Image (cartoon, rainbow, N blue to C red; front, side, top):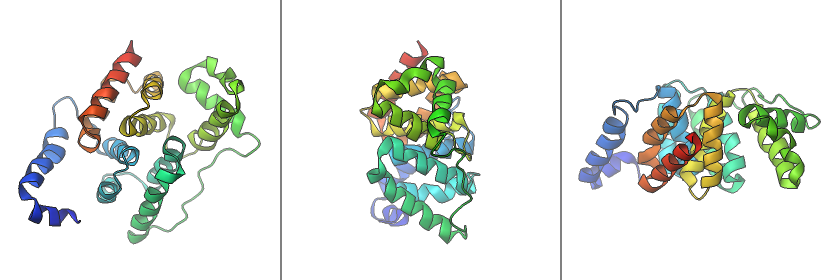
Length: 230
């Protein structure tokens, strides 16, 4: 159902929901974010919670607010590692439809910086930069750890279009929004902090995503941020 239909069928609900999402949360003193950062977080959170219909509504606003098609596509691609292709593919299709409707030529310029020969090495470098030098040996713990270094970090974190701080931000949002990933969420909260996305920033991110993912997952995310900060 289109949003405007909801204003006709559910006017009281839409009045309160709209005020909370678009006025109260966005303008809460001390919890504001730059528009482009806020939309990057919100789109990642919507992928995490599988909010496809709201994603379709928010993506044009995000593009108007300054997110580039490359930034959006990079966010969607990286989501595959945290959500799986089964949950990410509908969002890739929706993104392509919206970009095409806005006159964007696809495919976009390729953003890869690694090859199949060096993806593991460069993925390990990215892990070490985010989490510390101890991560240089982590890939040896088993094949899934090796895949994590080569595929997740080597194939995606090394791409152009988003920097490491932005990539850790969207990973934090993917994990917070899907729930049930608190150990990983705590680790990535710490990774964010290591890169300069401090506790105050992460709480602002959770606050801006709360209307889209709900109170339980938001409170769990803040708990993970507090634990990481310790």
